[in-house]
Length: 599
Image (tube, rainbow, N blue to C red):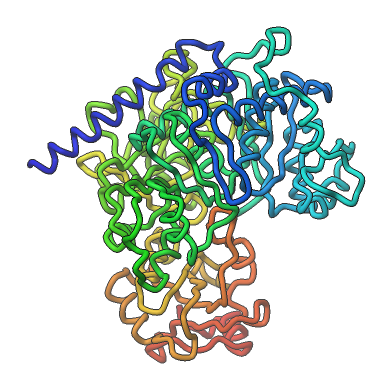
């Protein structure tokens, strides 16, 4: 009882703190990101704001640098309503660029540094970019996308280039860093776009989410409030800054309270704790697989030699949640659930193992969320005889929805959508519980327990049916990952000739394929999973192909199926005739096609 009371107090304080800090954003609609940056500079002056191994900015320097970029943008003829693309690795300058653009009324599209060719061209075209700032080391791949645009755009290099591009890092030095005069300031409101951030899905072309000044500020202040960030905190940020976690949340948690953020170019499991200790960090931002990599690393004295008090992030799987927190002695693991473009946000403020967040009953009216029954086969929500969605009961999985409202007094309920109107329309579900209502579709299946804790079940599209049952790829992957010797695992369904649904298949990375205990794994799966959920196929891979946020890419895996000739990896089948896993070869594939293999 005492533990529950403490939990209620934690949530009450956190939610009220977030409401208090974000309320002024909605109340003064003329104060945009540039104005807030100016306030931070005045309040925190020469305190360190952003640091890396190669450069650093105090608050005053960051503000001045943004002013230079704002004036540079004006000199290029860029202004309110225009978009510019930024392709640059992690560094403090990255933030100065997009804050300066926002101050000039220009929205910055944050481009994945791994893109090239058609997917890059798509990202440039969908936002209607008028120009691009590209780090010199990314000019070559950027050119492959630029060549596929119908109309070329000017490219400005950051750093020395051999292609004759103008150097923006030199040009901005010509402009003063003093505050912009009234005649240099565009007429902006918090509803104007500041950023375009691309969704990092594992399938299809990226969608550009529209991030207004209001949304960016609410993300920054809201997450800082949830983490109870302080001026003496230092955030460790090694996630890609072209995504929300690394580029907005981590930065905002620090800047809004006068703290600082140490920016590393990319994640390194071997250097992570060395950096955190050397840079005296008190927080870090994560995605779940980053934590798994750290947990799989050999134990060492560094594990508890740090001052980290809060790990903030999402995607930490239940199978390692408690173990990760205990091994590294982290007082608070603040798991959250949110979407860059969405109106749904949940926080696990009391580090409840496995939960992605909690909504106490007393806050439910303020933040209207619902889980509704979903038909996996039909890929639609189930509806009753009256045509309304069916709300899920306790512990029943369903798609999580957030009610959409354009009420200025409820800014968190707004859905700003994407650049593509069709993509925006697809994320809105109408006539859910009453005629004319509108709800944001998260695209995720979650379940809620009696105390209001939410648990992630699976992505819609990842869940598949086999033997008439829904299989959660997340649940199966967590079970596989907990078996000794398994380093990484991803689960998906593959088509089998002559059978309905999709058979479960897992691509796994192990310490040593030759010595891996297949029989032991089979026994473990039989003990922990129902028969329909156990993967029938195992594919051993040297590594998994990942997105920028460490999510496994599944499209090619699904396409290659269980044919070893199409992938070159060893594949095994759980053959009940042999009472064990057998190696798949061409004869086996032919036998499956002929219907000679029992499933």
